[in-house]
Image: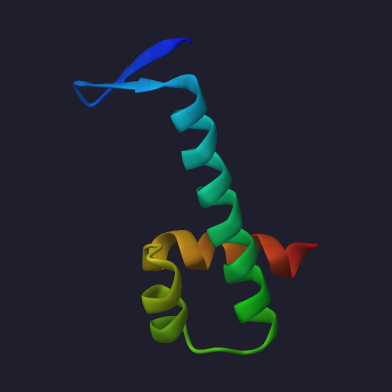
Length: 64
């Protein structure tokens, strides 16, 4: 079991992978909500992502 320090807290590699998976899931949900035309304020509340991050995802999605 590998250990890493994050913000002064020791976390396992498995926990780190779970955190990354949750982050990726929130991004996927954000992309779907953007496609549905859901207003930014609702996406922010539903995903917990910052407005800046949501706008970055939206901008990247529009370029694809």
